[in-house]
Length: 327
Image: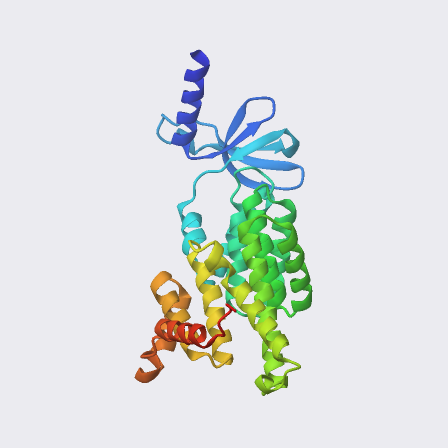
């Protein structure tokens, strides 16, 4: 009972002070504001005065605590950082970069937000389409992969690193790593990202085939190759929507990739139907806006095509014209 009361009192006190709390391996704790750290020491600013006496709490001192003595750190909440983690845009890169610089020393400490902040920074860098920033993001993602305490942050960093490799021209290397990850991982987010990178590569291969074989329908030697390439790229693009449809962002991204494949294949009805799926199923995504723009660009007679009815008709005709299997 006494132990429970002490635990409750400690938790209440820590919540009220809104300070960084260092839990030490020997069982006690120190509260204050972390001001700096290096490989061996964490420096903590602590109040000296009685917080109940007006003006007394302003007196502080800075003490050094060996990192080896620290079990974990309870970092004080920061609403500004939380807001940037959820909704920062590329024009806020300087602020997120400052957050990363402050928190990077805590990357390996349980409950630290450093990994999430670093991933956000890398992702914002990729959105700029600046090769130099993409190259810098690889270093950040790689560091998080190696040192973060959070498996979730490590997985997110792995995805980011693969995207950054593609953005910096290391496509072949990224594809090989994506293939290896797809064969080894059970993490759905990593698997989705690996499949997407392979889909992009498969689409490039498909485009190159079409350029080299513009009359592939008339060449019996390449028809099978065309169908294999076509099926493979769609299989990869459709993967998230088929198996992780609740992931709106990645499902819409894959479906929009499929729209592009249908367009270069001159299969407009399929492109239209897939764009409509994006608009209906994933309306809050960037790809939904792209799909709407694509649909708005089409002629009324093109939009009037009822692909499902057409497909049913072709299926019925095929069954009618097929030879009777009975003797």
